Length: 491
Image (cartoon, rainbow, N blue to C red; front, top):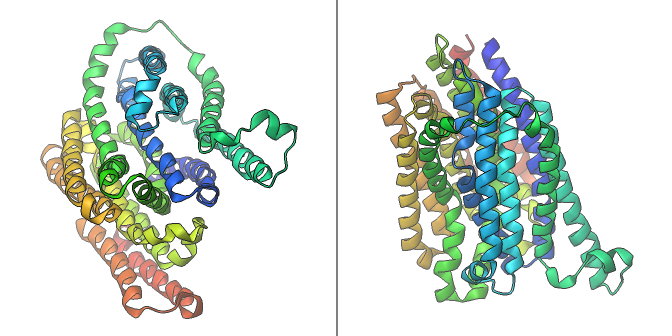
């Protein structure tokens, strides 16, 4: 229990920083969806889908490789860190240079021929973020969760502050016919959604500078001989990461590409904007998964050699699912409140994707928890294979059904993809690194949460009159059921 409390404490710190940081980050969603039409918000949704792919590509699994090799017996953490950092700096510099040289052709391929500056800005953003991932990983291995949290929160506060300045202050002032030296000096109405990207660029620079002391501390001469085993370990993770990003983000790319010839540019971007905004309402489960991963990955490696580690992993999974299923129920019972996170009612037509995406994220969280088996056994090629399997499901389902069903097809494809990966990973894990997961308890908690949500749909009680207090009863029912279910674990 002391080990579980340590993990819970670290998850709480990482979770608090992630929740605070992502909360501030997501505070721009009400601002963006108020200022921009769905078609304009579609541009933001699409560009950040590409960012997710590029971050994975530029880190090429070296973050996890750093965890693995720096914790090996007899290894020098400073040498491992210096080697990994040198590799990423070199590859990132080449990427940024190529992006600057070919900015115009890339912009034309993206269908933004008049905005080649987007390509340059995002090349620098993803480059700095890729390099920053390694000193952030170092802070995690050194248990410096507070420093880690402070830097991430500072990054997001800069991003939020600049969004408020450009879109909350300058834009309304200029549109009302006013202005002052600030708007004349720093604001150009023609930049539009570009100010979202400029704010991100400046925030990434600030984060990079704050991490500079961690980067230079204890630097030694890189050992190029170490790169070969590191790359052998990490490259399957790169494939897994790219395929994973395809599962998570490629639907946004495909929506535009597949709907454009059928519905035209405006309707395609409208669907993309609505889907991207409503996807944000699955934030709570996504936050919890991210917080857990930050704490759990180094924790799992450090506990691997301890007696009873597999039983510990199983207990962690049960508690993890308990929290995720409860979060699903909480969000869906109070969706009539959560929807005001997107103030513009024009986006609410897409709210029907929220329960599908929340459940999909539960399956994704379970899959991430299961991934301990191929990371600890160094069978990372299985991780790549599982991600590719999921990517194929995502690709096929979206290509077949998006032209007919639009963004609803993307939501269901996400659910089917993550559920399939979760099931396949479980059976492979039983063969190579069997963990005695509490399948009955896990299934019961997810099933009860889904049943209680379904019951509210059947009852169809008006929320503003009786629904909210009745929902409290439903939530308490889930808590009481879980309390009895988890008693053997507590003992």
